[in-house]
Amino acid sequence: MDIPADEILIGRQAIFNASGNLFAYEVRSNREHNGQATSSALMLKTFIETGFDKVAGPHKAMISVEPQFLIDMAPLPFEAQKVLLTLPVDTELTDALNGCLENCLAQGFSVGIENYNFEEKWQSLLNKIDFVKIDINASKENLSEKLTSLKQFSIKTIAENISTDEQEADCKAMAFDFFQGENFSQPTLLVTRTLSENEIIILQLLASLNDPDVTIDSLDNLIQQDPALSYKMLRYINSAAIGLRQKIDSIKQAVVLLGLKRVKAWATVLAMAGMKTENKDLLVNAVVRAFMCQALVSHSGNANPDSAFTVGTLSILDVMMRTPMANILEQLPLSDEISAALLKHEGELGKALACAIAYEKLDWDNACFPGCDTECLNETYLNSSHEGFRAVMGMEV
Image (cartoon, rainbow, N blue to C red; front, side):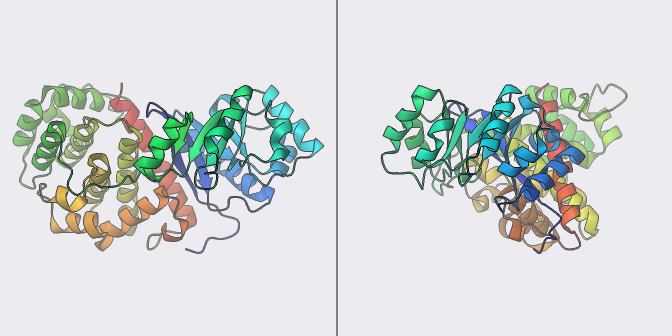
C-alpha cells in the first residue's frame, strides 16, 4: 500500500509481565526510525488528535522517539504516567540529549533503550534509564551473564521478538521482567491438541448462539440456562459501554431495544470472555477486529456489517484455543460466507478480516481495503481500538 509522506499508520504490540498480565502497549508506526524528527512529530500529531486512550486504552503507551524530537519538543506534551519513552539503539549521545533526558526524568517520564546491544557507549546512561528492550535473536551469546550485569542498575529488561513457546520459557528462565513478540498473539497452533472441558462447553454455546435459526425465545432460553452468562450479559448491557438510558432487566427486553443480531454478537463475545486464558489482550483483539471489520464493510456497502462483526469476533478462536480454525469451524453452524472469510480470507468479509489482522501485526504493506485510503484506515483502526477497550472494560465492571 502506497502511503503519502505526510500520513502515518499507527498500530500497537502488547508487552506482558512474567505472570502474563498486560504491562503496556508498544505503539508502532510505518515510519519508524527514519532518522528524522518528523516521524515522531507525525505520531505526536496523531496522538493529540485522537488521544492515547484510543491506542492503549487504560494501559501505558511505549513510544520510540527520535533524539532530535526530544530536544526540539522539550518539555514533552505527554502525561508522564501514561508514556514510556524509548531511544533508538543508533542514538548519538550528545550534551544536548543528555540534558534533555535529565529533564524528562525529572518530569517523571520512564526512559529506555530499544534493541539494546550492551554497547559501551550506553554505560553513562545506565544509572538514569529505567528499562532496556533486548532482541533475543540478536543478543544470544552470553545473554544470561549480560543480563546479570544490569541488575546493579535496577534496570527492567524486556525480551522482544519472542516467537515460540521455547523462547518464552528460556526468557523467563533468564528472569527477564517483561515479554513481547508474536508468540503472544499468534502462538503455534496444535493440530492434535485436545480441547479442555471449558473450551468444549464454550464451543457448544457459540454453536447455539450462531445458529441461523435461533429466535428471540430460544436465545433468551439459551442465555438463561447459563446463569453466569445471563448475569454478565445484563451487567454489560447496562454498563456505560452500551450507554442505554433505561435499565434492562431481561434478555428479551435487550433484544427488543438492541436487536437480535446485536445481542447475539455480544453474547458471543461474553461467552469467549469465559475462556480460561491468561492473555486478556486476545479478547481485546477480537473485539477490535470485530469493530474494524464491521466499519470497513459498512464503508464499502458490499457485505453485511453484522456478519463482519461476527467474523472479527470469531477470528481469534484459533489463537485462544491454540487449535487450527478448520477444526473449530467443523463444530460451528456458520454460513459458507463467514466460514470462507475465517478460513481463507475470501470475499468482502475475508478482505476486511485480512486488513484488520495485517494492521494488528503491523504489516503495513497488506493493511489495505478497497476504497479506504490511509486516513480512512487509521481512523477506522483507532476508533475500533477505542470501542474495543470500552467494550472489554465494560465486561469487567
